[in-house]
Image (tube, rainbow over all chains, first blue to last red):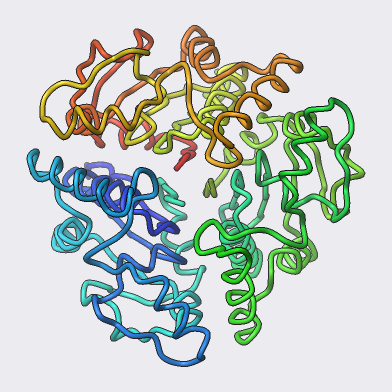
Length: 161
Length: 161
Length: 161
């Protein structure tokens, strides 16, 4: 008799705060390690986690201005609480290093290598004036909200907003 | 043989940030377009999305004071990130208009016309000193937490907090 | 014929804002009152809701510094919106008292007495330099992300982030 298929985990990342990215990676890694299929869907400010450092928005003038302000990317994000001009982030990353906890970029790479699927929201890309080439190469798919809903149907959904 | 019933989508909106309202509408519209039953439950600051512009809190003195400060309503909400005294909101709404993306109010109306059910949290109403008449007419139900849990039992739950 | 088992509710609390704690308690109490099994998993800033007042972080110098700044605990948390140096919290707690709504600490106690299971994230404990003794006695388990995933598999998941 075949073993029961484990339930999948779908993560919807709407926030760009570093804490939310860390939680997403932590859950994705634990889920993959226990054999659960994992999909990470990044939308709105969450898309920052997928932005290649140095990527420049194109298109509308407003989109290009906005991209100057919304400058976080895959390698560097602000904390939602206690950012303190970067001091809080620095302290947290140092503490994490001491316990071998991965920053978001390395966490995403590890999750992807373990088979997690990474999706970017097509509406957000358009709005921010970004192209697929502006995203890190771990992105498997660019899709609308329906892509998220189809992935979510089968199992556990965690929203990081 | 009858087709399988699609899973439902239940959205719990606890935040009043415009981004969260946009995400809720976007998901609700995609879910209805693909035949999924949809319930939107608004609680805490999320109730602002349902407040009729110009509604005035009654009851306790504190509730009336609080309502002056918590002044967002169905037609106008601040951004959680990059609000910049309204400049961020203005830029985002302009960019959205360019790609035919709807602001929250129009998005909620469209979702409701497509059959999404809109619920308001009764505890929050009481706390904020509001009556049902202070809410937009698209609200189908006013209910406690149990109303949300009953809707959530059947399908996918997304929390926007 | 046996009655159908009600679906469980699993709450993932990642935020330390008082609103999120109130929502978690409200949902947990309604779910228990209707016979649903309930698990509350607290991680990241959400762990503040479980910190015994006066608990002092040990370990690394940075962890001890951080704990001075991240000073919220089970008895006292800031609001995410309209905190206003404590005035918003004071007003909200007074309004809640008028309608017999419980603050987070009493809400958690009540939920625990009604059978809700309370879990603390082991990674977060380590990162913040806290021991299990620094947490309120209602905590049933200290566990990693897998503990959350196992609880989540069976039913409704609500993320408060």
